[in-house]
Length: 388
Image (cartoon, rainbow, N blue to C red; front, side, top):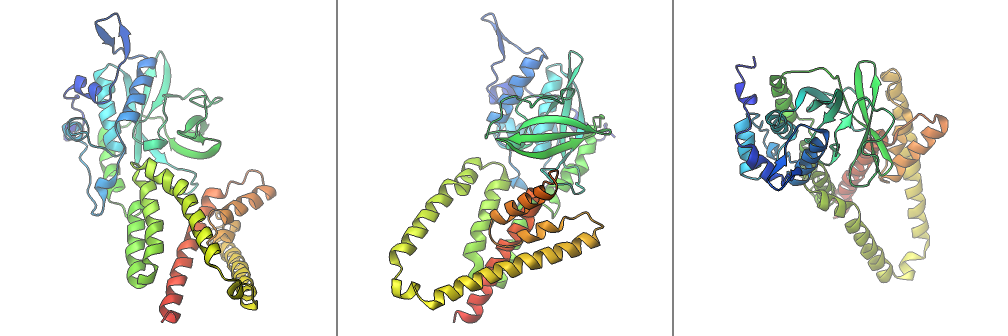
């Protein structure tokens, strides 16, 4: 099988050009050359330079499903020669080739990306287990800003790696669940289960079907956003501006290559828009149109709407709890309203009060976002029917 896909096993065409692309300095040895020995310090430097100089990107897959080539010459030309970005399999296979050329001892593994989910997940990622001085380290440069910034020692289950917790990257801590190794991530004390894998070697050809699935599956978050936007806007054109902005923010986040835009949209831009909106509404409001009985009626109707939505969500959550044999916590149903992310946080708080081991925030965000989309669709429907 490896012979049939020999292009996956080819050496890096030009190691010097690769190192120049990531501006790798290494450890100076005298004034003549740089140390490229397969040491832990050099592996840390290689990972850091790769993560900071080659952007992660999966927009090649959209809008039409297109499976990227995993042949080393094709990846090298795309990322190193033409300074392009790459998906997880492209980035890591290229990095595997560099490790092999520099004399590191390693083997590839198949990885599941969990990101807080407890549901069954298709393995759509890969990484390398590197052995240095008898110790095993997890090396991964293909997960965008969720990648570990240092090699993670698999035998150290007590400390975060790296030790300094930052809002800019995830620190990892491994633990074992039977024969599976699970990594917990910590980013500014925001913790979640990141990835899991079986530390057993696989062949590079095993990545071909996983690469195809990850590039073409309809479960892709970016493709889901595009489909939802097109379908909803065709059904209710009046909701296009609101839902379009929501999905644009989702595209910023899921693309993996627009961290600055994603951070601005989530924080600074949202705060600025909130200030201008509240100021403009407050400055133009007339007391005779606001301080009347109709305003109180609107507030009461809104309160009743939230109460009915919360109770309905809990009842439906209870039904899903029964249908799934207890796999779904009914509390996440209470988050099915448009108050993002407060409703999800309330579900998390109430769940932890009942059982401190409950971590419902990530699961509750699903119905919470669905509540936003549902509210937008309902608003579009009301505009279409009663807006004249």
